[in-house]
Image (tube, rainbow, N blue to C red):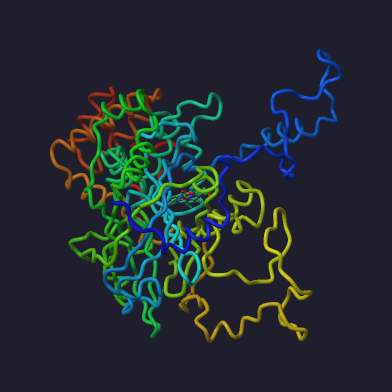
Length: 527
Ligand code: HEM
């Protein structure tokens, strides 16, 4: 049965911006009724079209500007509205109000995506899936911009453009659209030992989900919870699908891609339309601040997960998707997530990948959405009212009255912040930071293979076969033998039998690489 979405504040707010064209007469953008939408204005029946035809000009001009740039990554996506319900209070750990009262419901908009393909690529590509959630809380928007894999390829944001340039279609011929099967991707990966754990996940069945409703979501980085008393916990976020985690096999994925490249998009849409609302358990792993260094990896390293046997995932809430967007472009395309959209009680960590993301999202959205006022686009608006001294800019919607747009001031207006501080305004978690200004990787980030091994060993025999076959398929597409060889050398650090099986099939020998400290030089470091 369909949920009652009446109480959803965000949907109520969106409704004030929506309209229907049903039974309405055609007008221009200025509201002028149009009496002929078939013929342009001409000089004589067979003569040239007149420049003065403002109706033609308006229509064509708008059409000419319909496209905006697709996202630089995660271009292909599917979105849905829903609700997050808290089933157990997290008040002991965080002062975030939406995580306090049991039973509270927070409106959400979720966008799932593939990472590498263009907006028109297939849903069934072997790829990571984005799992981005905008919580419209009473304290402002909180965004959890995660993936369906709990770790990432690289440890430092400085490598992100390189990773994406390697995985995207090659610049000369724009081939291939598939996420990974090509020289540049495997060249980069074979030179990037820190990516091996992620590669195990991406070559596993996790990277070809059966449905968006049947995949997990992870915040990936460690974040922080801060409670009323200022006590800090590190936290890892998890979403576990009530339908279980399911994948398709590679040959199925390829066939589905041929028959229906919109397979995931359609599946999500139809499930929601029919009332089979997708649901996830929301869970967290909590680590008291004083235990930060008790692991044999660094909590700030995004290529590592915290094994659930060491820190169990505790379930606190339910995420339900219960309404399809009314308009793909207005909602799914224009939604703008950002890992730095926080509420009091949640903060980010010094994870060097996350730190770079904090810069990247607003920056890219300025060019993708074209104006510093993209927070005013209905899907991005907070349900909490927005008051500040920002003003002007392209496409400004809000009409702020009065002559003062600064503070402090003695005239009145201008949003004083002092009152806010005593009323629970956001305060960054205070943290002691010291050290030299350095451009190098922490020693605590150097183990690249232990968790890759753990993951490979955790796979059942059929799953290991799928993973091997995926590597064989991928590396057999690589045209440069040196890359295949170096990649097999990397696999040997994870599992010798895996490396040998892949090597035999892709026609190279397993050469021993020198175990790298941080990253190996471009000659491949083969000994
Ligand atoms: C989208 C940058 C790492 C998850 C994007 C976008 C950019 C970006 C520029 C497009 C945003 C837009 O146009 O609105 C980066 C950088 C990273 C990084 C610089 C590393 C330094 C990650 C990681 C995750 C992630 C580690 C997962 C934890 C996502 C998701 C989206 C996205 C889910 C799609 C959001 C949507 O649906 O609109 N990223 N990203 N990214 N990123 Fe990242």
